[in-house]
Length: 446
Image: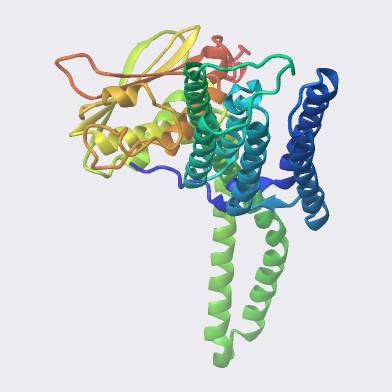
C-alpha cells in the first residue's frame, strides 16, 4: 500500500527542552521552598536545620542564575543537559526532604514532578534513568531522614506502615503520570507530523493546478514572437527559394516553426480544458479520474450505480477529494484478491460512494484505530503484501472530512470477505447547483 512519505524533520530537536521553561519552574520552586521554610521555622517555631535548607535553596537559585547568564533565552537543552538539570532538581528536593522528615513530609510527592517533565519531552531512556534516580531517592528517604519538624514539647512518630503507603503512592503516581504524559505527548507529536504532511499534499496539488495557468500565460506570451518568426521565415523562403544552398535550412526553419505553433496550440487547448474541469467536475468523471490510474495492476475495478435519484451531482474539482478517494481506491487494489467495487449513489440530500474489495478485510484491532497516524507495525491487516496502514490513510481521512464527508470503515458481511469504506457527503458539499438542474443546461424557447 502506497502512503505519502512521512514528514521529514530533525527529530532530535523535538527532545530539546527550552531552558527558559526549566528556569521559570525552578524560580517558582525556589519561592515555594523559601516560603515553606520561613513559615515552618518562624511561623510555627519548629526546630530543624534551617540554615542547611536555605543553603540548598540557594544552590538552586545560583544554578538558575548561572544558566540564565551562560545561555541565551531561547536556548534549548539537549537530552543529556536536560537530564542533568532535572537530576539536580531531584537531588536538591531529596536533600530538603531528608532534613524535614523524609516521606512523612507532605511535600514529598513533588519528587514525581521532574520525571513527569522528562516523560513529556525527553527520550525514553533518559526518562527511565531519571525515574530510577527518583525511586532510589524515595526509597532512601523511607528509611533515612531527620525527624519531622514538630512542637518542642512533644514528638510525632509516623508509623512505618504509613511511610510504606507513602512510598507506594509516590512511586505509583510517578509511574502513572509519567506514562500518561508520554502517551499524550507522543500522540500530539504524531498528529503534528501528520497534519504537516497533509498540508504538503495540499500544497503540491495546488502547485500542479497552478501549472495550467502558467501554460496558458506562456502560450499567450510566446504566440506573438512566434508569429513574427513565421512571417520572416515565409519571406525568406520566397526570396531564397531559387538558391539551393538555403533550401534545406529554410525547410527546417519552417517545419520547426510549425512544430512550435502546434505545441502552443496544444498547451492552450489543454489549459482551457483543464480550467473548465477545475470549475465543474461531474460525479461520474470524478470516479473515472480516481480509478483510472489503478486499472493496470491486475485487479478488476467495477463501478456500480447504486440507488440514485435526480440529476448527477456536478461539483468543483477539489484536490483533497481526489487524493483522499484515490488513496482509498489504492488501498483496496493493494489488498484485493481479484476485484474492487466502487458503488456510487445520490439523491436530493446525500452523495454516497462505497469502496469495497474481496481481500482479507480489516483486522479487528485495526478497525478500532483507523485514521490514527503512524499506526504501529503490529496493527496491520491480516495480509501484509502491501504494508501497513498509517499516515496515508490518515491524510485521506483528514482531507475527505475537511470536504464535509463522513467516513465509515467496516468489513463486508459474511459470507463475503473484504474491507468496505463508505463516504457520505451532504448534497450541497458535492454539487455546485444543489438538487436543481444547472442553469447552463436549461435551454429556453425561441
